[in-house]
Amino acid sequence: MYTGQLVFSQLMDFLPKHPFNSCVQHYRGNYRAREFSCFDQFLCMAFAQLTGRESLRDIETCLRAMQPKLYHAGFRGRVSRSTLADANERRDWRIFADLAQVLIHTARALYAGEDFGVELEQTAYVLDSTTIDLCLSLFPWAHFRRHKAAIKLHTLMDLRGSIPCSVHVTHGKTSDLKMLDEIIPEPGAFYIMDRGCIDFARLYALAQSLAYFVIRSKDKVIYTRVSRARVDKSTGLRSDLTVRLTGPLSPQRYPAPLRCVRYFDAETGRRFIFLTNNFALPALIVARLYRCRWQVELFFKWIKQHLRIKAFFGTSQNAVKTQVWIAISIYVLVAIIKKELRIQRPLSEILQILSILLFEKVPMAQALTTTELQNLKVGCHNQLPLFDF
Figure: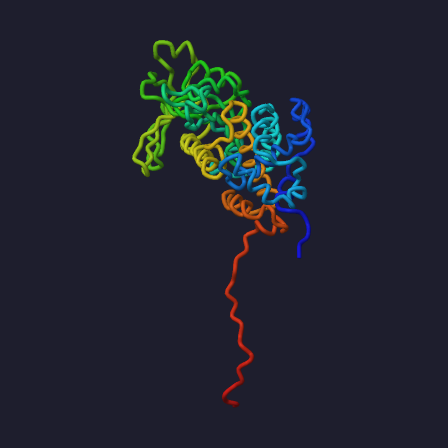
């Protein structure tokens, strides 16, 4: 019989304690905190994310039902709904944002050699955003529509391992173009974006930083052809052109030549036009890179289905950002555990198993390992032979 740590305690052993304490000290998170520390706050919110709690009262009720096991799970403060609400309201959300960045750095190193479907030596990022609708009367700071509130999660995701590298939480009216200003371009890397990010001045600044971009073009973009390359139309490619922009202000904003790849998707019957500043990659690889952009959509769908980011435990901007960053930390932490323990299950199954085993004393690696049952034919040796030959 296993008499070691609880699964929840084993899970938190993968959390880097020293960097977490450094983040807390940097933002004075435990200032005048007598009982309920930042680590206790993180444990409560992590429990809510892993088990799908609905409210602060739900968190309090479930944790108090496990009172004899809380100390062994790592809790040192008394769990109270009002105390947790005050902590989410007052403690700086940047504590957990910085913690998430530490976990992201660890996860990206683990998934550096992961295959994402395209043979590419350079790093490939996807920039996109998702909107989460809120109630305007409860979240008046999250401006979106006249009678509606919302927040946006602007995400820069590394395609190797689907790890979110950078997340900016803003109100619903913030344009995706502003997030291009927040990017620190990595020379040689590819940035894949949808047509909502077309701003030729910003794209030219990205190109001047020796980074590459692949972006879907709008129909109103005006250009003239400079040269044409041959393509294999059986692959879906229609043309591979070198062009120059000829719109009213486009030549001043992007004076260099661009590559224009036209592609027809036979599965959906849709036609796409891609613009890129890379002239070395095969045209089909450019089209496949854009298709990989849907991995960020799957990431948004995944966290909305399996983590608590659509129903918030607080209404202030600080409480919302705290919950979002802790949710991202849990996602990346589970991704780290999957790689460290060499678990073949998808992340959704790992979360489902953890949600019912958090306060059980079983080895986490054993609980998460896929075991296949085999039907063994066992002969019955109690039956005596009827005939002797």
